[in-house]
Amino acid sequence: RHFNLVFVLNFEAESMVRIFSSIMQWFLSKFPSQVSSLGQSVVKATVDIFESMTTNMLPTPAKSHYTFNLRDLSKVHQGICLCTKNSLPTSDDLIKCWAHECQRVFEDRLVNGED
Image 1 (tube, rainbow, N blue to C red):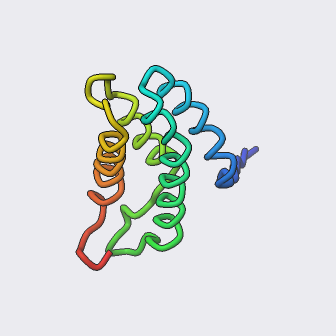
Image 2: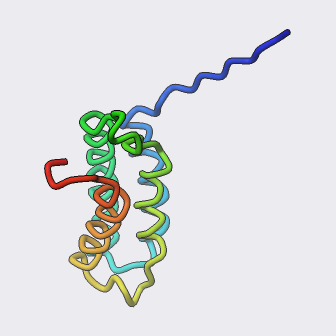
């Protein structure tokens, strides 16, 4: 009998920033400059939140759903990429959209107020 073992390392923060920055730069290129200039900051902040969640919110028997992966990070950016030019006229609107997506992806998974 033969068994295959596949092991994949997690991406480093720099790699995730590079990947999602290129996606956000492309998407935000059709928006006003005040909105598109925030793309890099949004990506870095999202990666920081993701790393904080994966480091501090480890799964336990009572909170087994506290498993975060690259899919969660991509859901935040995917939600932002669903916006139209009319829905993000200013940089404040992009920040509100980003905060909403982070809450939707990360905060909705938390069980209690302490977390």
